[in-house]
Image 1 (cartoon, rainbow, N blue to C red):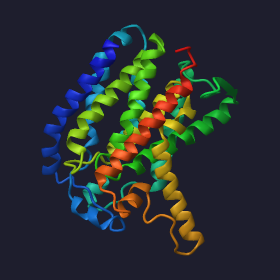
Image 2 (image 1 turned 135 degrees about the vertical axis):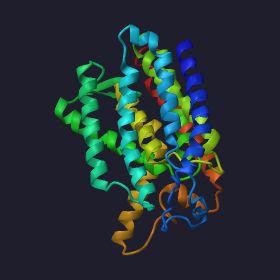
Image 3 (image 1 turned 90 degrees about the vertical axis):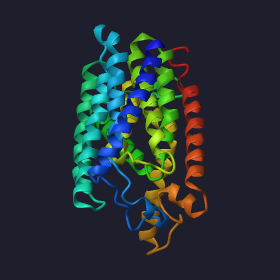
Length: 331
């Protein structure tokens, strides 16, 4: 528990300090966000707000897990580093995307196919590493029923890779309102931290990472709450998506993403439903605007209300997720 508290404090402190130093640099480099013309018109005043701010919590989390997780590493447990490196790979993919957007001053970076193939390769590599390290099995844990469904490894690998890529991009879609993605992910980080604490020594390093993630996001929100002084960009949102997905698989319970990731899922499904219905009906829409957070904005909700309600929904479902797995190790 002490190590996890240390990770939280260090993650928060380092992220806060790095943010203070990073934002002026991003402004000087003119690393401003380009706002899509098809997006909400009231978001156009955000044009030019520095992006790639996710770098601050990526650095903060990295420092925190090295310091707080040092004792565990000396005991031979590197699980938190595996999760961090995997998340970092996705963060790098996001950074490349952000860099191209900033360099060419438009809102398109890597192509969808390029991002998909890079993300899929990273997911497969991570899953194979987890399997090799004995942290992951093809036995699909079913929350609430405290049982497993045994799958063929190849079938599991294919399914798991697409779940990871889907989760990462769902978190990316959720990042569309000041403070939304980070606020929604706070309860998710708390959930994984509590699980790491309650399940014993074997999972403590994963709890350290989750606590560092919590601290990093709290530090980032100092600069990202409405009105945002900086955006996390794809650098941060893809890292976050990678972190959430990696934790679920490192704990060997990927189906828990249905509960802890309920907001991400709803955001993504609203986008898919909107596009599909638009094409089928030749121009009709179900939502006033997709993803879902824009629909509620169009209904008159302020950004702060959207963030508050979505974060509350995330918290409720994370509490439900805890009830779903608490019998796994008799906690």
